[in-house]
Length: 206
Image (cartoon, rainbow, N blue to C red):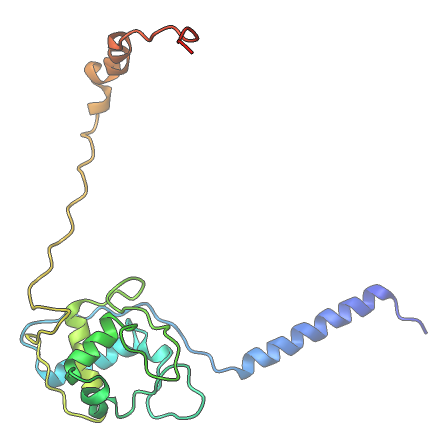
C-alpha cells in the first residue's frame, strides 16, 4: 500500500521532534537565576568576604558558567582548583592579589596557554561587578589552594580604595504645564520672523 506523501512528512516531523526532545532531556540543565545583590560593608572579615565571593562567582559573576573547580580533560576555560597557590607565580612581578585583579579587570593581559582569550572584564557590562565585589571574589579565589589575605581595604593596580565619582544626575523634566506658557508656544513663530532673509538662489558667479 502506498503511504500518502503528507503522512510521510508528518511522521518525519514527529520523529525529528521526538529525537531532539530526547536529546534535550539528556543534556544537564542549569537554571539561571537573577543576580543576587549582596550588601557589602567595610567591616567584613576576610572569611566573610571569601564566602560572599563564592556566592558572587556562582551567581552575579557567572564565573562558574565557564570555569570549573576540580575537573580535568577538555575544558572551555582553566580549572580553578589550586589557583590560590599558583597565582603568585603565574606572572613574574605580580603577587597573587595583583594577578587575580588583572585577570578580572583586564583578562586579555595574560591568557593561560592553551585557552582562548574569551573572558570579559567583570567590572564592565554585562557582568558589572563593583570593586568591593571583586575584592570578595579575589578572597574566594585565594581559598582555592591558598589562604585568603585581602580585606575590604585592600588596594591594587585597578582599585585605589577611593570611591568612584557617581554619574551626573539626569536633567530634570520640564515642570508640568510649562510647555503651555504663551512665551513657549509663540517662540518658534518669533524665531521665524527674526531669521535674516536668505540670498536669492541661482544667481551666484561661476
